[in-house]
Image (tube, rainbow, N blue to C red; front, side):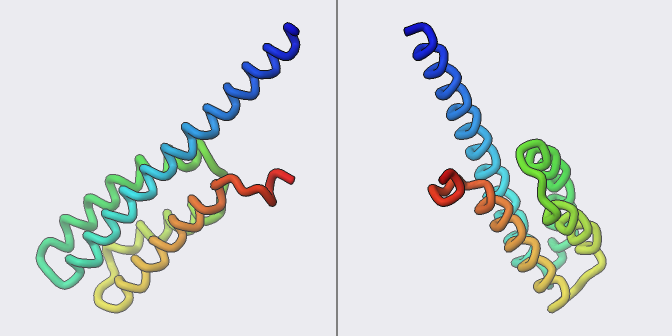
Length: 119
């Protein structure tokens, strides 16, 4: 009976940790996407510089949280994209922001549990 209780406690601790990590990743990804949208909306206006600075500042927080939860080459690609966004304009900026948003979505989707991944 003790073993069953111990196994149950371990199982629920792992499940709670996984759920918490997924919630953190979801929240940070949603906030990153909101900041990317602000940059996309402001890419032709004077507020572009402010939006890009806000995105760069948030990127440090996103990267530290995401790299703790997941190991992904997309994070490194995203770091390069965030670094060059300041120097892009027009269609180049829009394309870079779309790619950045898609990579963030992929990172989150890779971490979602799926029955096929468990079995």
